[in-house]
Image (tube, rainbow, N blue to C red; front, side, top):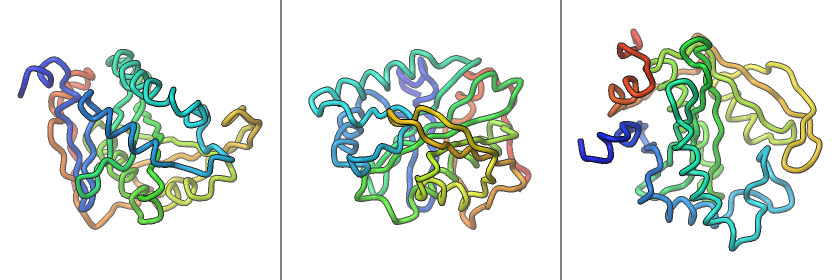
Length: 222
């Protein structure tokens, strides 16, 4: 363990699937993280994000993304945390997958959010990276519920949720992407997860569990 992972054990966490490696974003990753977003994520005419962060002027996006990484890290505690995974495919950073929780010790509930550069879309990567973090949450962190949401028009995001095993859990009207939108909520419990044929490889978990105050390591029976 180097000095940085000793100070911040989340940096040592590594999830691996057959095609992907997911690791928390470090400062060294920020330039590639910015380049992935600048390459294009969605149709500029319609933002899939609740906060339209990609719609800022192009010259403001790099600093805003760096600030987001630092702000997220600074706000992470055992009581409320965000694990911001960079997603690598064939050595290229292609997107981001967040795993988020508040009062996890009591609620045992996580939520997710993600994006992929357009060149990586349509290849099943979104399903694979979401499956990876949900597997990690259920089998290693001891989560009992995973939640997510998407604008009702966002068929790609909703298709990923269905593929992972989420079920609809109501809808609300929200300010979304700068406009009023119907938002679909979805919920997943461990027994409903569409478990893949592959096994998730996990490294660096014990330091994360200790940092988040989760006590003994949780492991799946399967």
